[in-house]
Length: 468
Image (cartoon, rainbow, N blue to C red; front, side, top):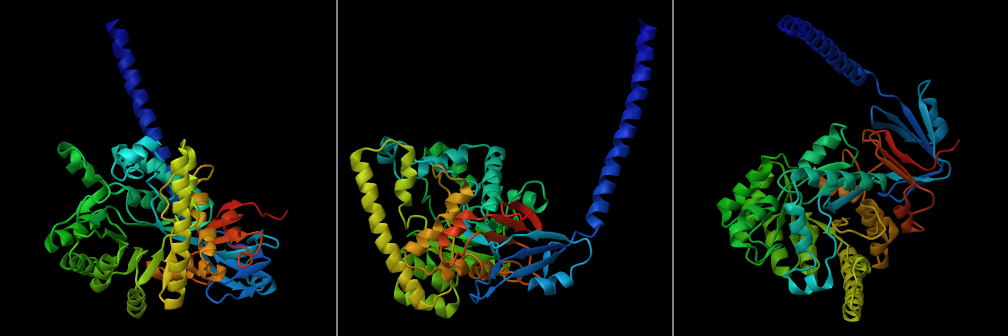
Protein backbone atom coordinates (compact mmCIF):
# COMPACT_ATOMS: atom_id res chain seq x y z
CA UNK A 1 0.00 0.00 0.00
CA UNK A 2 2.88 2.35 0.83
CA UNK A 3 4.50 1.75 -2.59
CA UNK A 4 1.16 2.22 -4.26
CA UNK A 5 0.67 5.51 -2.49
CA UNK A 6 4.16 6.65 -3.48
CA UNK A 7 3.60 5.63 -7.10
CA UNK A 8 0.24 7.34 -7.11
CA UNK A 9 1.75 10.47 -5.60
CA UNK A 10 4.60 10.58 -8.12
CA UNK A 11 2.33 9.92 -11.10
CA UNK A 12 -0.30 12.32 -9.77
CA UNK A 13 2.28 15.04 -9.24
CA UNK A 14 3.65 14.50 -12.72
CA UNK A 15 0.14 14.68 -14.14
CA UNK A 16 -0.58 17.81 -12.20
CA UNK A 17 2.58 19.43 -13.55
CA UNK A 18 1.62 18.48 -17.09
CA UNK A 19 -1.88 19.82 -16.54
CA UNK A 20 -0.55 23.09 -15.12
CA UNK A 21 1.86 23.42 -18.06
CA UNK A 22 -0.96 22.78 -20.52
CA UNK A 23 -3.26 25.20 -18.71
CA UNK A 24 -0.58 27.89 -18.73
CA UNK A 25 0.01 27.35 -22.43
CA UNK A 26 -3.69 27.63 -23.17
CA UNK A 27 -3.96 30.74 -20.96
CA UNK A 28 -1.16 32.54 -22.78
CA UNK A 29 -2.50 31.38 -26.13
CA UNK A 30 -5.86 32.90 -25.29
CA UNK A 31 -4.19 36.13 -24.23
CA UNK A 32 -2.21 36.18 -27.48
CA UNK A 33 -5.34 35.53 -29.52
CA UNK A 34 -7.10 38.31 -27.66
CA UNK A 35 -4.21 40.68 -28.31
CA UNK A 36 -4.11 39.77 -31.98
CA UNK A 37 -7.86 40.25 -32.24
CA UNK A 38 -7.60 43.61 -30.53
CA UNK A 39 -4.82 44.65 -32.90
CA UNK A 40 -6.72 43.55 -36.01
CA UNK A 41 -8.51 46.32 -37.88
CA UNK A 42 -12.15 46.61 -36.85
CA UNK A 43 -14.55 45.83 -39.70
CA UNK A 44 -15.85 48.78 -41.69
CA UNK A 45 -19.62 49.13 -41.60
CA UNK A 46 -21.96 51.04 -43.89
CA UNK A 47 -25.36 51.94 -42.41
CA UNK A 48 -28.07 53.07 -44.82
CA UNK A 49 -31.46 54.53 -43.91
CA UNK A 50 -34.33 56.35 -45.54
CA UNK A 51 -33.70 59.48 -43.46
CA UNK A 52 -31.08 60.95 -41.13
CA UNK A 53 -32.32 63.66 -38.75
CA UNK A 54 -29.83 66.17 -37.34
CA UNK A 55 -31.29 67.42 -34.03
CA UNK A 56 -29.02 70.48 -33.93
CA UNK A 57 -30.34 71.99 -37.17
CA UNK A 58 -33.52 70.02 -37.71
CA UNK A 59 -32.30 69.18 -41.23
CA UNK A 60 -33.07 65.80 -42.76
CA UNK A 61 -30.82 63.96 -45.20
CA UNK A 62 -32.85 61.55 -47.33
CA UNK A 63 -31.70 58.94 -48.15
CA UNK A 64 -28.64 58.76 -45.93
CA UNK A 65 -25.59 56.63 -45.27
CA UNK A 66 -23.04 56.52 -42.47
CA UNK A 67 -19.59 54.95 -42.86
CA UNK A 68 -18.13 53.56 -39.63
CA UNK A 69 -14.57 52.48 -38.95
CA UNK A 70 -12.92 51.49 -35.67
CA UNK A 71 -16.11 52.28 -33.77
CA UNK A 72 -16.27 55.88 -34.97
CA UNK A 73 -18.08 57.72 -37.72
CA UNK A 74 -15.87 58.31 -40.74
CA UNK A 75 -18.29 59.82 -43.24
CA UNK A 76 -21.93 60.89 -43.52
CA UNK A 77 -23.76 61.68 -46.75
CA UNK A 78 -25.90 60.40 -49.62
CA UNK A 79 -25.58 56.62 -50.10
CA UNK A 80 -23.87 56.68 -53.55
CA UNK A 81 -21.18 59.07 -52.28
CA UNK A 82 -20.50 57.25 -49.02
CA UNK A 83 -20.72 53.78 -50.54
CA UNK A 84 -18.07 54.74 -53.09
CA UNK A 85 -15.63 55.31 -50.23
CA UNK A 86 -16.39 52.03 -48.45
CA UNK A 87 -13.69 49.38 -48.89
CA UNK A 88 -14.43 46.06 -50.50
CA UNK A 89 -15.94 43.64 -48.03
CA UNK A 90 -17.44 46.33 -45.80
CA UNK A 91 -20.48 45.17 -43.89
CA UNK A 92 -23.72 46.85 -44.98
CA UNK A 93 -26.71 47.39 -42.70
CA UNK A 94 -29.79 48.52 -44.60
CA UNK A 95 -32.48 50.01 -42.34
CA UNK A 96 -34.92 50.63 -45.18
CA UNK A 97 -37.12 53.70 -44.74
CA UNK A 98 -36.27 54.19 -41.06
CA UNK A 99 -35.18 57.49 -39.49
CA UNK A 100 -31.62 57.47 -38.16
CA UNK A 101 -30.66 59.58 -35.12
CA UNK A 102 -27.77 60.02 -32.69
CA UNK A 103 -27.77 57.67 -29.71
CA UNK A 104 -29.96 59.05 -26.92
CA UNK A 105 -28.52 60.50 -23.70
CA UNK A 106 -30.26 60.20 -20.33
CA UNK A 107 -28.54 62.93 -18.34
CA UNK A 108 -30.06 62.06 -14.95
CA UNK A 109 -30.64 58.48 -13.92
CA UNK A 110 -30.09 56.03 -11.05
CA UNK A 111 -29.21 52.63 -12.47
CA UNK A 112 -28.49 50.98 -9.13
CA UNK A 113 -31.76 51.95 -7.48
CA UNK A 114 -35.06 50.16 -8.11
CA UNK A 115 -37.73 51.58 -5.81
CA UNK A 116 -41.08 49.83 -5.55
CA UNK A 117 -44.06 51.56 -3.99
CA UNK A 118 -44.71 50.13 -0.50
CA UNK A 119 -48.17 49.31 0.79
CA UNK A 120 -50.39 52.25 1.63
CA UNK A 121 -50.01 51.83 5.39
CA UNK A 122 -46.21 52.01 5.06
CA UNK A 123 -46.46 55.19 2.99
CA UNK A 124 -48.57 56.98 5.57
CA UNK A 125 -46.71 55.80 8.67
CA UNK A 126 -43.12 56.67 7.72
CA UNK A 127 -41.32 59.93 7.02
CA UNK A 128 -40.78 60.03 3.26
CA UNK A 129 -42.63 56.71 3.23
CA UNK A 130 -42.96 56.49 -0.55
CA UNK A 131 -39.19 56.59 -1.20
CA UNK A 132 -37.18 55.83 1.94
CA UNK A 133 -38.16 52.13 2.32
CA UNK A 134 -36.94 51.31 -1.19
CA UNK A 135 -33.74 53.26 -0.66
CA UNK A 136 -33.06 51.48 2.61
CA UNK A 137 -33.58 48.11 0.94
CA UNK A 138 -31.06 49.08 -1.74
CA UNK A 139 -28.47 50.17 0.80
CA UNK A 140 -28.97 46.97 2.81
CA UNK A 141 -28.39 44.89 -0.33
CA UNK A 142 -24.92 43.44 -0.82
CA UNK A 143 -22.75 45.58 -3.13
CA UNK A 144 -22.36 42.65 -5.52
CA UNK A 145 -26.10 42.11 -5.88
CA UNK A 146 -26.67 45.82 -6.29
CA UNK A 147 -24.17 46.12 -9.13
CA UNK A 148 -25.68 43.10 -10.87
CA UNK A 149 -29.12 44.68 -10.68
CA UNK A 150 -27.58 47.86 -12.04
CA UNK A 151 -26.09 45.88 -14.90
CA UNK A 152 -29.57 44.66 -15.83
CA UNK A 153 -30.93 48.22 -15.79
CA UNK A 154 -27.96 49.40 -17.87
CA UNK A 155 -28.58 46.73 -20.50
CA UNK A 156 -32.27 47.64 -20.65
CA UNK A 157 -31.38 51.32 -21.05
CA UNK A 158 -29.06 50.50 -23.93
CA UNK A 159 -31.65 48.32 -25.65
CA UNK A 160 -34.08 51.26 -25.53
CA UNK A 161 -31.61 53.54 -27.31
CA UNK A 162 -29.83 55.26 -24.41
CA UNK A 163 -26.21 54.88 -25.46
CA UNK A 164 -24.94 57.37 -22.84
CA UNK A 165 -26.20 58.05 -19.32
CA UNK A 166 -25.13 60.22 -16.40
CA UNK A 167 -25.70 58.29 -13.18
CA UNK A 168 -26.26 60.82 -10.40
CA UNK A 169 -25.89 58.96 -7.15
CA UNK A 170 -27.68 56.18 -5.25
CA UNK A 171 -25.10 53.60 -6.24
CA UNK A 172 -23.34 52.82 -2.99
CA UNK A 173 -19.75 53.95 -2.63
CA UNK A 174 -18.55 53.04 -6.11
CA UNK A 175 -21.19 50.85 -7.74
CA UNK A 176 -21.72 53.06 -10.77
CA UNK A 177 -17.98 53.53 -11.31
CA UNK A 178 -17.44 49.75 -11.18
CA UNK A 179 -20.32 49.19 -13.59
CA UNK A 180 -18.93 51.89 -15.91
CA UNK A 181 -15.54 50.18 -15.96
CA UNK A 182 -17.06 46.75 -16.62
CA UNK A 183 -19.05 48.13 -19.55
CA UNK A 184 -16.01 49.95 -20.95
CA UNK A 185 -14.01 46.72 -20.73
CA UNK A 186 -16.72 44.84 -22.64
CA UNK A 187 -17.56 42.52 -19.74
CA UNK A 188 -21.23 43.49 -19.65
CA UNK A 189 -23.44 45.38 -22.11
CA UNK A 190 -24.57 48.88 -21.29
CA UNK A 191 -24.38 52.55 -22.21
CA UNK A 192 -21.44 54.86 -21.68
CA UNK A 193 -21.71 55.95 -18.04
CA UNK A 194 -20.63 59.11 -16.30
CA UNK A 195 -20.52 58.05 -12.66
CA UNK A 196 -21.13 60.35 -9.70
CA UNK A 197 -20.40 57.92 -6.87
CA UNK A 198 -21.92 59.07 -3.58
CA UNK A 199 -24.17 62.09 -3.31
CA UNK A 200 -22.85 65.01 -1.25
CA UNK A 201 -25.27 66.39 1.32
CA UNK A 202 -25.22 68.44 4.51
CA UNK A 203 -27.75 66.23 6.26
CA UNK A 204 -29.66 62.96 5.96
CA UNK A 205 -32.23 64.48 3.65
CA UNK A 206 -33.36 61.15 2.22
CA UNK A 207 -33.25 58.84 5.22
CA UNK A 208 -34.70 60.10 8.47
CA UNK A 209 -35.12 58.79 12.02
CA UNK A 210 -32.66 55.92 11.73
CA UNK A 211 -31.54 53.95 14.75
CA UNK A 212 -28.59 56.03 16.03
CA UNK A 213 -26.52 52.90 16.54
CA UNK A 214 -26.80 52.09 12.82
CA UNK A 215 -27.31 55.44 11.14
CA UNK A 216 -23.67 56.31 10.46
CA UNK A 217 -22.62 53.20 8.51
CA UNK A 218 -25.92 53.14 6.59
CA UNK A 219 -25.72 56.77 5.52
CA UNK A 220 -22.05 56.43 4.56
CA UNK A 221 -22.96 53.75 2.03
CA UNK A 222 -24.97 56.27 0.04
CA UNK A 223 -23.94 59.81 0.97
CA UNK A 224 -20.90 61.91 1.75
CA UNK A 225 -21.92 64.34 4.46
CA UNK A 226 -20.20 67.61 5.26
CA UNK A 227 -20.36 70.35 7.88
CA UNK A 228 -18.34 73.39 6.92
CA UNK A 229 -16.20 74.26 3.87
CA UNK A 230 -13.26 72.05 4.84
CA UNK A 231 -15.42 68.94 5.10
CA UNK A 232 -17.14 69.91 1.87
CA UNK A 233 -13.81 69.93 0.04
CA UNK A 234 -12.87 66.64 1.66
CA UNK A 235 -16.13 65.07 0.50
CA UNK A 236 -15.21 65.89 -3.10
CA UNK A 237 -11.79 64.33 -2.60
CA UNK A 238 -13.30 61.23 -1.03
CA UNK A 239 -15.42 60.74 -4.15
CA UNK A 240 -12.47 61.25 -6.50
CA UNK A 241 -10.75 58.31 -4.80
CA UNK A 242 -13.27 56.14 -6.68
CA UNK A 243 -12.52 57.87 -10.00
CA UNK A 244 -15.92 59.52 -10.46
CA UNK A 245 -16.76 61.59 -13.55
CA UNK A 246 -19.04 64.18 -11.95
CA UNK A 247 -19.93 65.48 -8.48
CA UNK A 248 -23.58 65.37 -7.41
CA UNK A 249 -24.76 67.58 -4.54
CA UNK A 250 -28.18 67.62 -2.89
CA UNK A 251 -28.69 71.09 -1.44
CA UNK A 252 -30.89 71.25 1.64
CA UNK A 253 -31.91 74.30 3.63
CA UNK A 254 -28.90 73.95 5.92
CA UNK A 255 -26.32 74.03 3.11
CA UNK A 256 -24.32 77.25 3.33
CA UNK A 257 -22.94 79.37 0.52
CA UNK A 258 -19.40 78.80 1.77
CA UNK A 259 -19.86 75.01 1.68
CA UNK A 260 -21.30 75.02 -1.83
CA UNK A 261 -18.59 77.32 -3.12
CA UNK A 262 -15.91 75.09 -1.61
CA UNK A 263 -17.40 72.04 -3.36
CA UNK A 264 -17.45 73.75 -6.75
CA UNK A 265 -13.92 75.10 -6.37
CA UNK A 266 -12.53 71.70 -5.40
CA UNK A 267 -14.44 69.85 -8.14
CA UNK A 268 -13.43 72.31 -10.85
CA UNK A 269 -9.83 72.15 -9.64
CA UNK A 270 -10.00 68.44 -10.45
CA UNK A 271 -11.79 69.06 -13.79
CA UNK A 272 -15.09 67.64 -12.57
CA UNK A 273 -18.47 69.22 -13.27
CA UNK A 274 -20.96 69.76 -10.44
CA UNK A 275 -24.63 68.81 -10.75
CA UNK A 276 -26.93 70.13 -8.01
CA UNK A 277 -30.26 68.74 -6.87
CA UNK A 278 -32.21 71.85 -5.83
CA UNK A 279 -35.90 72.76 -5.82
CA UNK A 280 -36.49 76.01 -3.92
CA UNK A 281 -35.37 79.48 -5.04
CA UNK A 282 -32.99 80.00 -2.05
CA UNK A 283 -31.24 76.69 -2.63
CA UNK A 284 -31.07 77.23 -6.38
CA UNK A 285 -29.53 80.64 -5.74
CA UNK A 286 -26.81 79.15 -3.54
CA UNK A 287 -25.91 76.79 -6.38
CA UNK A 288 -25.90 79.55 -9.00
CA UNK A 289 -23.75 81.86 -6.89
CA UNK A 290 -21.26 79.03 -6.41
CA UNK A 291 -20.95 78.57 -10.18
CA UNK A 292 -22.28 75.03 -10.56
CA UNK A 293 -22.56 73.41 -13.98
CA UNK A 294 -26.16 72.20 -13.89
CA UNK A 295 -29.32 72.50 -11.83
CA UNK A 296 -31.21 69.21 -11.52
CA UNK A 297 -35.00 69.36 -11.13
CA UNK A 298 -35.17 73.08 -10.25
CA UNK A 299 -38.96 73.15 -10.17
CA UNK A 300 -39.12 76.34 -8.11
CA UNK A 301 -36.72 78.35 -10.29
CA UNK A 302 -37.60 82.02 -10.79
CA UNK A 303 -37.44 83.94 -14.07
CA UNK A 304 -34.54 85.97 -12.69
CA UNK A 305 -32.65 82.78 -11.90
CA UNK A 306 -33.30 81.41 -15.39
CA UNK A 307 -31.82 84.60 -16.83
CA UNK A 308 -28.80 84.24 -14.53
CA UNK A 309 -28.35 80.64 -15.67
CA UNK A 310 -28.57 81.71 -19.30
CA UNK A 311 -25.98 84.45 -18.82
CA UNK A 312 -23.60 82.14 -16.93
CA UNK A 313 -24.07 79.17 -19.28
CA UNK A 314 -25.42 76.96 -16.50
CA UNK A 315 -27.59 74.10 -17.76
CA UNK A 316 -31.10 73.38 -16.57
CA UNK A 317 -31.46 69.59 -16.50
CA UNK A 318 -35.20 68.97 -16.68
CA UNK A 319 -36.43 65.81 -14.96
CA UNK A 320 -39.98 65.21 -16.25
CA UNK A 321 -40.53 62.04 -14.22
CA UNK A 322 -43.76 63.18 -12.59
CA UNK A 323 -44.96 65.56 -15.31
CA UNK A 324 -47.58 63.32 -16.88
CA UNK A 325 -49.34 60.86 -14.56
CA UNK A 326 -46.31 58.83 -13.53
CA UNK A 327 -47.25 59.01 -9.85
CA UNK A 328 -50.48 57.11 -10.43
CA UNK A 329 -48.75 54.60 -12.73
CA UNK A 330 -46.22 53.44 -10.18
CA UNK A 331 -48.98 53.02 -7.58
CA UNK A 332 -50.64 50.38 -9.77
CA UNK A 333 -48.46 47.79 -8.04
CA UNK A 334 -50.35 48.20 -4.75
CA UNK A 335 -53.95 48.08 -3.59
CA UNK A 336 -55.04 51.70 -3.16
CA UNK A 337 -57.89 53.01 -1.09
CA UNK A 338 -60.31 55.27 -2.98
CA UNK A 339 -58.94 58.21 -1.01
CA UNK A 340 -55.32 57.53 -2.03
CA UNK A 341 -56.28 56.95 -5.67
CA UNK A 342 -58.16 60.22 -5.72
CA UNK A 343 -55.29 62.07 -4.05
CA UNK A 344 -52.78 60.67 -6.55
CA UNK A 345 -54.98 61.67 -9.50
CA UNK A 346 -55.35 65.19 -8.11
CA UNK A 347 -51.59 65.38 -7.54
CA UNK A 348 -50.93 64.29 -11.11
CA UNK A 349 -53.19 67.04 -12.42
CA UNK A 350 -51.40 69.66 -10.33
CA UNK A 351 -48.06 68.32 -11.61
CA UNK A 352 -49.22 68.64 -15.22
CA UNK A 353 -50.12 72.29 -14.72
CA UNK A 354 -46.85 73.10 -12.95
CA UNK A 355 -44.87 71.24 -15.61
CA UNK A 356 -46.49 73.14 -18.46
CA UNK A 357 -45.75 76.46 -16.76
CA UNK A 358 -42.14 75.45 -16.06
CA UNK A 359 -41.46 74.25 -19.60
CA UNK A 360 -42.97 77.41 -21.06
CA UNK A 361 -40.72 79.60 -18.90
CA UNK A 362 -37.62 77.54 -19.71
CA UNK A 363 -38.24 77.82 -23.45
CA UNK A 364 -38.92 81.54 -23.20
CA UNK A 365 -35.80 82.23 -21.10
CA UNK A 366 -33.24 80.99 -23.60
CA UNK A 367 -31.42 78.95 -20.93
CA UNK A 368 -29.51 75.89 -22.07
CA UNK A 369 -31.42 72.75 -21.11
CA UNK A 370 -31.17 68.99 -21.25
CA UNK A 371 -33.48 66.26 -19.99
CA UNK A 372 -33.04 63.24 -17.75
CA UNK A 373 -35.51 60.60 -16.70
CA UNK A 374 -34.50 60.57 -13.00
CA UNK A 375 -35.57 56.95 -13.27
CA UNK A 376 -35.16 54.86 -10.14
CA UNK A 377 -38.68 53.42 -9.88
CA UNK A 378 -40.25 50.11 -10.78
CA UNK A 379 -42.70 50.93 -13.58
CA UNK A 380 -45.26 48.12 -14.07
CA UNK A 381 -44.98 46.40 -17.42
CA UNK A 382 -41.87 48.28 -18.60
CA UNK A 383 -38.15 47.63 -18.61
CA UNK A 384 -35.92 50.29 -17.09
CA UNK A 385 -35.18 51.68 -20.54
CA UNK A 386 -38.84 51.79 -21.51
CA UNK A 387 -39.67 53.55 -18.25
CA UNK A 388 -36.99 56.16 -18.91
CA UNK A 389 -38.27 56.72 -22.45
CA UNK A 390 -41.65 57.76 -21.04
CA UNK A 391 -40.11 61.20 -20.48
CA UNK A 392 -40.39 62.04 -24.19
CA UNK A 393 -44.18 62.18 -24.33
CA UNK A 394 -44.24 63.74 -20.85
CA UNK A 395 -42.19 66.65 -22.18
CA UNK A 396 -44.37 67.00 -25.27
CA UNK A 397 -47.56 66.99 -23.19
CA UNK A 398 -45.95 69.79 -21.15
CA UNK A 399 -45.58 71.92 -24.25
CA UNK A 400 -42.06 71.19 -25.49
CA UNK A 401 -41.76 70.84 -29.30
CA UNK A 402 -40.38 67.50 -30.54
CA UNK A 403 -37.20 69.02 -32.01
CA UNK A 404 -36.37 70.64 -28.66
CA UNK A 405 -36.97 67.30 -26.93
CA UNK A 406 -34.56 65.62 -29.33
CA UNK A 407 -31.94 68.29 -28.71
CA UNK A 408 -32.38 67.90 -24.95
CA UNK A 409 -31.36 64.23 -25.15
CA UNK A 410 -28.67 64.50 -27.85
CA UNK A 411 -26.72 67.66 -28.74
CA UNK A 412 -27.65 69.70 -25.65
CA UNK A 413 -27.02 66.83 -23.27
CA UNK A 414 -23.65 66.09 -24.88
CA UNK A 415 -22.59 69.69 -24.33
CA UNK A 416 -23.73 69.63 -20.70
CA UNK A 417 -21.68 66.49 -20.07
CA UNK A 418 -18.66 68.03 -21.77
CA UNK A 419 -18.75 65.20 -24.30
CA UNK A 420 -19.82 67.16 -27.39
CA UNK A 421 -16.68 65.93 -29.16
CA UNK A 422 -17.71 62.28 -28.61
CA UNK A 423 -21.48 61.85 -28.67
CA UNK A 424 -24.76 63.62 -29.38
CA UNK A 425 -24.56 63.94 -33.16
CA UNK A 426 -24.01 61.80 -36.26
CA UNK A 427 -20.80 63.46 -37.41
CA UNK A 428 -17.33 62.32 -38.50
CA UNK A 429 -15.00 61.71 -35.57
CA UNK A 430 -17.70 60.94 -33.04
CA UNK A 431 -18.51 57.51 -31.62
CA UNK A 432 -20.77 55.48 -33.88
CA UNK A 433 -23.68 55.61 -31.43
CA UNK A 434 -26.84 55.45 -33.52
CA UNK A 435 -30.52 54.68 -33.08
CA UNK A 436 -33.30 54.35 -35.60
CA UNK A 437 -37.09 54.46 -35.44
CA UNK A 438 -39.63 53.35 -38.00
CA UNK A 439 -41.44 56.69 -38.29
CA UNK A 440 -40.74 60.40 -37.93
CA UNK A 441 -40.10 61.55 -34.33
CA UNK A 442 -40.77 65.17 -35.29
CA UNK A 443 -44.31 64.21 -36.25
CA UNK A 444 -44.69 61.72 -33.39
CA UNK A 445 -42.21 61.96 -30.51
CA UNK A 446 -43.52 58.68 -29.10
CA UNK A 447 -41.46 56.99 -31.82
CA UNK A 448 -38.57 57.38 -29.38
CA UNK A 449 -40.38 54.98 -27.07
CA UNK A 450 -40.19 52.37 -29.85
CA UNK A 451 -36.54 52.42 -30.90
CA UNK A 452 -35.99 49.65 -33.45
CA UNK A 453 -32.23 49.82 -34.02
CA UNK A 454 -29.41 50.54 -31.59
CA UNK A 455 -25.69 50.74 -32.30
CA UNK A 456 -23.01 51.67 -29.77
CA UNK A 457 -19.43 52.22 -30.86
CA UNK A 458 -20.09 50.55 -34.20
CA UNK A 459 -21.49 47.38 -32.59
CA UNK A 460 -25.13 46.48 -33.21
CA UNK A 461 -27.07 46.09 -29.97
CA UNK A 462 -30.44 45.40 -31.56
CA UNK A 463 -31.87 45.53 -35.06
CA UNK A 464 -35.56 45.02 -35.71
CA UNK A 465 -35.32 46.80 -39.08
CA UNK A 466 -32.98 44.55 -41.04
CA UNK A 467 -33.80 44.45 -44.75
CA UNK A 468 -33.11 41.03 -46.24
